[in-house]
Amino acid sequence: AVVSTQSTGSSGINAEYGGQPLVTMFTVALCVLSLVASCHGYRLMEEEDGVVDYTGYKTIRVDLSGSAGAAAVVREWVDEERVDVLNEGIGDEADLLVGPNEWESVTGELENLAASYEILSEDVVGDVETERAQLLSAVPGVFDFNNYYAVKYMHSHLDALVSRHPEKAETFSLGQTYQGRDMKAIRISNNVASSGSKPIIWVDGGIHAREWVSSATVMYIVNSLLGEVEPSLQSKFQGLMNKYQFVILPMSNPDGYEFSRTGNRFWRKTRRPSGCKYGYETSNGRCIYGKCYGVDPNRNWDIDFGRQGVSKNPCSDVYPGKSAFTEKNTQAMSSWLAKHASQIDLYLSFHSYSQLFLKPVGYDRNPPVDAAMHNAAGSAVVNAIYGTHGKVYKNIRSVELYPTSGSSQDWMYSKGVKNAYTIELRDTGRHGFQLPASQIIPTGEENVRGFLALLETL
Image (tube, one colour):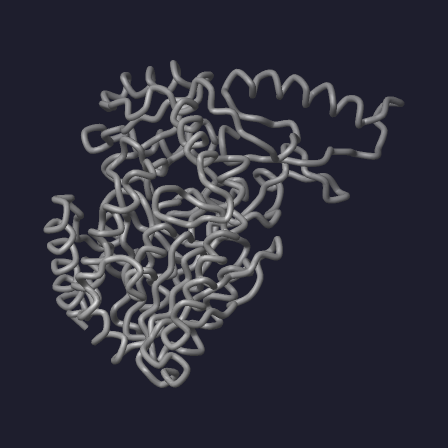
């Protein structure tokens, strides 16, 4: 696969055919397939699940609104793993990551379909290397908003905040990930030890591994609540912390996030082995075309599960899993949220990118009964964001972007949390997931004000 298929191990079939070991014949055939596959830019042989080289890759934005067949063709490319979709689904436009072996055929087919496109990045590997140099400039053990940091530094910063604000903050763990990382949350309120009966404001980030600015923005909100940044907003926050307890999970998918830092910058999913590519495996359970890793944690929730905006291929970026809540991440989150659902006044999940305020639901085009309330909330948020740095965020229902099943937002709405929303952060595509660290603070500034505006609508 171009990006989504990472593989380990080897295949083997212990049988004979016509006096020749079948494994030999199979190997020859597979080698031929591999040569064909390499011409198309995707991998069939099992390989190490390691660092992905993006030399020669480009990103493009395809306008699908003017070509009847273009959307179907792009979906076909995605299923074949010839390209990777970067934005949230295939609607009127799609942002695609295209490898050098696919470039001529993809752009040629788009031209034949009369589907226009623009190049967002001519040099993806250059963008990745620039970003990596920025990461290497960070001082070990330090956390600030001038860089993107490893999970352990985010967690140590949360602990440091508790040490500085023991009357207002405490940390706790929702559980462990597949790779054993902690899912550390922080609870913030005035007189936090006696705040268990207050209504809950839940905020999370980092559900998708490659969306680094989402966790950075949630960390900015944490620091704002505790007065570490945004001193001019403290009078507003103090009143809110008398009324609410804020339960915040900055990093929802730490396994995937760390892999996006060290292996595949565009990794989206969790990291648990999820099956064999296209389901092809030998009688003894070995994968023929490659082993797949991870599940899309925002398609893994038990609401309209597995119907829309998903793929049955375990190597796909939008593979929802064999059933709902297969992932330790989503199990831990949903268990805590279900237990406290009657107390939750707001569920807010930060993602990137596209600059959107997304309202429920993503699987049904019929407006929910609370649509008017959702519209008012969205208007308040996007207006507050625009008033900060002039950035335009669109206020739309999730289904207007692209029909999807199994999202955390929609699951929370189904549990009776009427205010359940998702915010897609900066930018609109030039940098995409690789938003420069210089934009962390302005993104935080505009969204903490949007957050305040949202709280005022409750």
